[in-house]
Length: 102
Image (cartoon, rainbow, N blue to C red):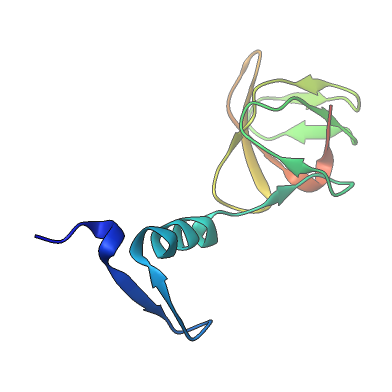
């Protein structure tokens, strides 16, 4: 019986044989999307952001003003969208270009 740490996988991109665990870690990292705010800061789940522009919220009849703080964002897997909550608005999704990391 072989242990996974003894297995090697050929990486076509680099042309090298890599340990299976290292290859799996690289594949997982490649699947992640980097989400950046309006000034280029890297965003992560749980960050707080500030709006840099007044935004009309469709379906809520409400406008979020510039300077509004949104807490505990969640990344959606799209490099330009973040999922968040704000009082009175369910299912709020903001574009990363309209926020700045707080």
